[in-house]
Image (cartoon, rainbow, N blue to C red):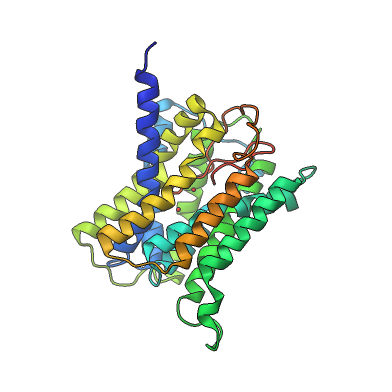
Length: 330
């Protein structure tokens, strides 16, 4: 049997974990020379350029119809611009490893949004249990006992709430994608290129009002971090994700969710000498446990699902198929 295709798939899978797991480290480094708005603008423009180039090389057609573009505009705002801004702003105040732990809660947020907003989709008992365990994990990560006796919204709490807001945006954006964009005959490359391009245009319009004209310090590490975040994490990485989904299936491919926070924490500790509090990795493990329960990974195996298209890049998150709670994408 030819093992080369599976080796290539494994290599892409490991690369995805490395690229997405390092995203929060790269954000931290890039913020040394850029404002959050400048960083988001840079990564979106670079991501759009790489995806537009891919569209041209593969001679794909752009979507048609005002309704489709209207829904893609909503996705671009909620799934790209808003969470990227929130995570970048939070990156000024939080360890990169902690941000990556919060990002792992995205499937839980997606489950809540899908259960609330998708017609006919109801959460079963196991999914509710998984969400409850994941929510408990989030509470443990926040560590509310650390703020007893302090004024509200002090210290790192606003930044942690921003991370939760970002993952909530991911959940809402993926749900919107499932309801209004998927099933219209557009492949993954076309959808991702369209939404990232729209997000770049939106950010170009918003940047002047969000500190986009602040002084910059374009050192080598700042430029390299922004390029990797944009061209790879917000651009080409989703192509690898699509290949992994096609060859391994959505559920197996979604296990990259569990590797990215591990990579993020390790890089933060080894490269930036970050130190986490005991409750943060413990809460992260509870979040992962909640995802495993909700996805039925800890129960009987589920039937194989057909490949689904990734919804964005960076933390590109795979859009769940009906009934699935796959990984959900800085």
